[in-house]
Image 1 (tube, rainbow, N blue to C red):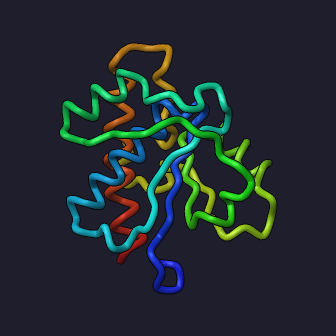
Image 2: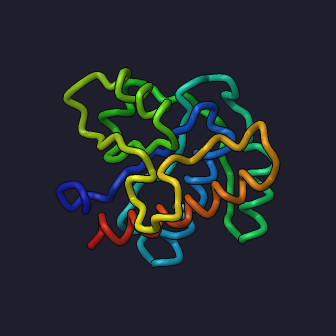
Length: 161
């Protein structure tokens, strides 16, 4: 789906914008590129609902997992604002807590579809929520990658067909 034949603008959101959402951004960009769909998107970025890490680069474990899979990642943490709800077509978050936060900050009558990334899943073995791996080991980042890859593929299949 493109918005009135315009390229799509997508924003991924987690709490601090250093683990899950920058990984989702990077993986989604790679899936778009690998499927030769770059013309369908004008913007793919990520944000946090909090400003804890504004200006910081992604967590070293996020970077490591992406680089091991040849997924380029280049991002600085930023906080989502009310203006973004009318700028982006999709604001996609990682868990229900951030979904609740986004819905409470939505200024109303916005154009953005605000949804869990897990809304775009087809594998019953994949959790709908992407858990925050920050306080755990690399396994949580591996799981995050697998979810982001799966959800990205399903998003493209459903929204661009």
